Image (cartoon, rainbow, N blue to C red; front, side, top):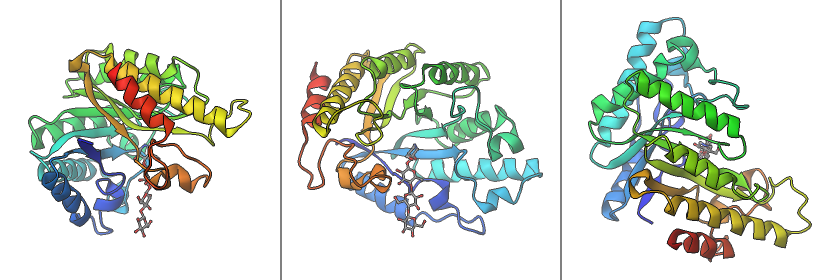
Length: 287
Ligand code: G3I
């Protein structure tokens, strides 16, 4: 392991208190752990439709105040980890669920559909002149039309002068994902010319809706998907490979376990023992 992403502790839902002040106890501990263990720390995430704490929501209708508070937030968070954070998911999940366009959010409504994103990217760049700045999203594998909208948004941001310097594909997929889907997504993202981050990979067994007969078939499917993702990522030119991040190490740690106790989406089992998918993934990296 060379890089970690905080699953929760660097998001607004953790950092922003009721009164709008910020708490950094947990992320500072994670940052110290990374420093002590020579790990890179990836910052996730600054602007996300899913989180708009009261300290921001109560500024609705007051664009100047919300603009200033969001700019100050991004600069405070990114500035704090400057020199340690190896990159940031500046905008997370900005494409609509069905891939039909850009997602509506408090941020887009109050600060402008594109402006809220360019604001965040510029504020992050002002706070850290060198950290790679990412646009991150999910279902870019299973929903090719969402991937098209995602790439067009990236191009729009670049044309608008946003310092976008990386693309993240979360890769929360299921074991019945058709062969080639992950490979096509990774290759398409790389075609824009920016580094690609496979940012949150897990391969759910219980979310697989295909006609798998039994768990063994699901595990085979999971192994295939992990191998394909590793092979596609390692097949990218080196300047397109940012990082490959699994959204957890042991099955028992996975957010998906909260949805279904029978799921086993990661490379290591509850006791931390590598599963067949781990060998497939490692083999794919070396291919
Ligand atoms: O641990 C605290 C507990 O102390 C506290 O009392 C409780 C109060 O709500 O919160 C607990 O924290 C929970 C945290 O997960 C623990 O890791 C938060 O409630 C809960 O909201 C948080 O869920 C995370 C979720 O994002 C929302 O932030 C999941 O762990 C995390 O896996 C999930 O990750 C997202 C990515 O950021 C974006 N892509 C999708 C992915 C999966 O949804």
